[in-house]
Length: 231
Image (cartoon, helix red, strand yellow):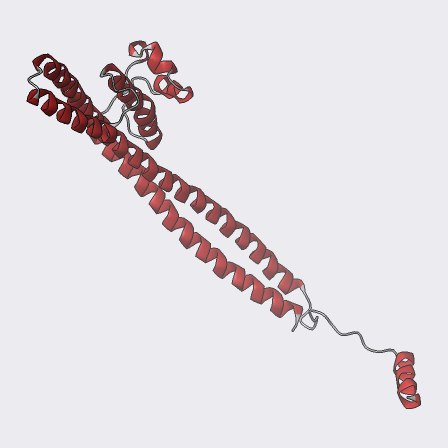
């Protein structure tokens, strides 16, 4: 095969591969734009606004290292995945923890409080059978607090889960955008290399082979024949 033919073949292959990368990049970019716009529109419809910086308590600002984002986004309307993650993890998360602690159920969640309610109902039934009015009233107070706390946990955990789902969706969109950019860069590099291949093909003599076989010199040919004859 001549060197020119090889260069042209590889260059055409590079152009086709570049076209494939461009198509892939366009598709991924569309996914990125869709994800970004979808998250923006859906979160914007909720009209959730971060508390102003001067309204945040010291606990809200310093609850966890990531709580600093509440100050960063202070006063802003929630419209991005990162904002949703911040609000879910560091604002709702803190207030759910505080709510459970206030109800005397520190560390409990919507799921675990259900078992506590069941235990208190059983306890109330037993106290009622024993005509223990005072004990029954105390247990009922605990049950009421647990019920209120569980309702708060349900509402907060549901909203938190929805916001984190939006955040996850935005991350997929961001990843698609990044891969799309890499695909565009790869396509551009392939186009440059293919152009270089075409240029090299047309400046290379048509008769030049890819790897020409060197001809045997007369002395080497005679020596080889003589060796064969002696054998």
